[in-house]
Amino acid sequence: MIGPVFFLLLETSIRKGVRAAIAFDMGVLLSDLIYIIIALIFYSEVSKITSGEYAHIIQIVGGIILMVFGLVTLLKKPKEDAKETDKQLNSTKKDLILLGLKGFLLNIANPGVIFYWITVIALGADGKKNANDAIDESTYWYILIIMITFFAVDLLKIFGAKKLRPFITENVLVGLNRLIGLIIIGTGVLLMIKGFLAK
Image (cartoon, rainbow, N blue to C red; front, top):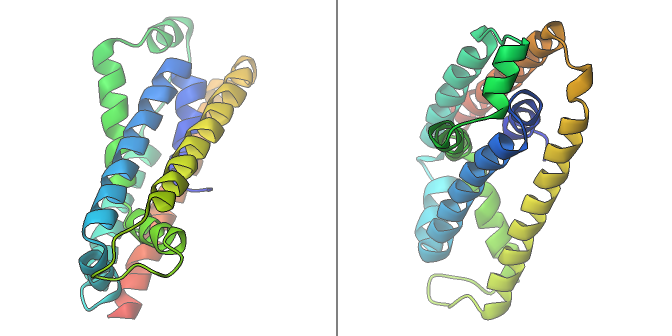
């Protein structure tokens, strides 16, 4: 799906290398996994919250978080020189953990993700799931295949973006940063508007 995570994943691969992009993606997948577990365990309760009277509050708060994140990205000034490139491509364990945390926080701050997984689980359960039903084994396989597909497609994006590295200049990085910042801010604004309209 095209969104803030998509563009940040490409930027991370271009600027910091494959290992860094995979670390970022693992953070995203971990937040997806947490949302899946919440959606599976508290299906009826979560669906009431996300479609009930508090849905607009979730959207507004999520929108604010994304807007702040977008502003930070927009104002960040990337530098592309030989020393900086070497440093970025040889990310330390701490750098990789921080990138994973960045991916985790960005994805978990987007309330659209929980809406997405509730919908996926409802479709996977073939409309049989309600407060008293148990989700059958086929639904778990369905979710697992989706997660594996997400990761496989993300790897294609990461390795594809790496091929672009020789063509990346400082001006391109600055433009990419601004584009990503604007996309994240735009996503946040849309979420806030949806929240206020729902209210």
